[in-house]
Image (cartoon, rainbow, N blue to C red; front, side, top):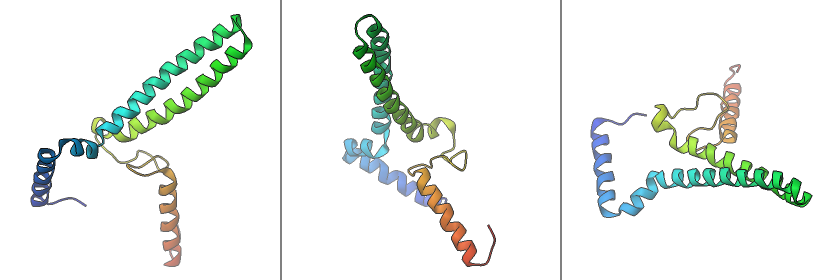
Length: 135
């Protein structure tokens, strides 16, 4: 639902007054801090992955337990890094891409998860069936 011109101006005035009164709180609400946090986690996970790779190859010369620890480090870093990078893309990419709408039916919506989208689709189907329509 689009805002009218008067509502947009009022919203801009409220945002400006919030930034003037409490800039720390306004920054926290903008979500930029979350994007930076997830980028930092993704970067650290990448470094952890490289350290695990080095331990994996170094363990061949030293001891097999070092190789196993390196592999586990690589696995954990990959899981953390992929999750953090997905959150960076979910939170920060609409400004670059232009549209915040999901590109496919199974992706994440802004602020929601794919399981919530799935439940919404099921509810819509149920309502249609109750009204006598076929999905």
